[in-house]
Image (cartoon, rainbow, N blue to C red; front, top):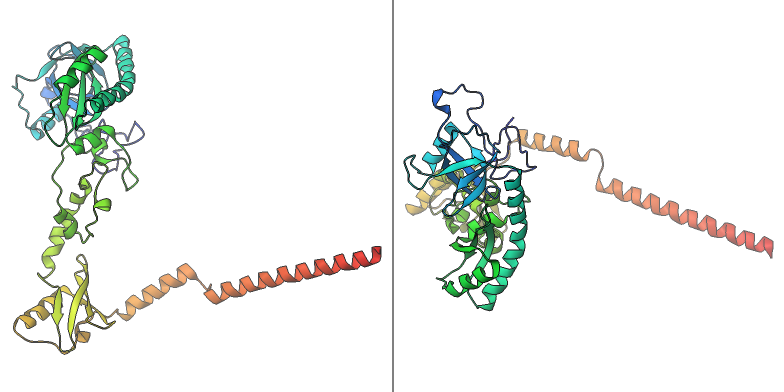
Length: 385
């Protein structure tokens, strides 16, 4: 059974205890495949899905998802985990616009043994300490940059530092100090704020792991217009994610809101009547209902989008209705009965007065018990005297 979390869908559930970039849904699990199932290209994941790339299986290795392999690198080799094989790789390459004949696609050398995996774990364990030292060195050089993550190559001969910066950084002196301190080849790679949050990870305001660190791989631009269309207040503290940018999830339901807004009249901010001007206070775009408040009064009217369109057209023709009472949406008796039945089921026969009377009875019992206890103590003291 596939994972039900949005964007994951890993076959057999989440083996890692939660959704992450290593989970992939095998669409062809129950479908007999053609003879070209053994596709020559394989998708390899590095550092738990932080980075993925395609490699050629020229050695015709029998690879399965989750196996560790040694792949060719620019200098030396790297160790990664097989994340996709077969026909799924074709779909992924088409999505990322990668051609099979690309010269940049390197080869898989062999399967990783226990010694290779143990060496990789030792290198991964040193990355955190190296990250702290790298940040100290960059601050000593007064560079306006932030080093977010460090990644060792599988053979330990090269280290990649991922950093974010607003402006162009001259890090020639920084690379020299890194090389003398860490004794490896240094590569500096600039990433965006969203990519940095995806590599570091964390918990969002929704209580779940960040989408960018679990399943989200493509980052689309998010504007404040997405919040306005969804009737959200423009509050940067609530709308911004841990990366300091607008939350990616603002785009998830934007298309649904855009379709629903097609039934709402344009410029419905106010309606003129003979009683006064009614101003728009709330819009329920899914129910197609708009709530208006009559100026300088406590009267509120809930109008349908069709009636609002008619009233706006009347105002455009210099016609003003006597009142909005005739257009106000009134609850039907059936709706009231349903609401009353729900309230009876939830509350029952308990009322506020019943609770208050019960509290008074308890207080009265306590006071009587204290009086009787004091009276008995006084009588015993008199007898002893």
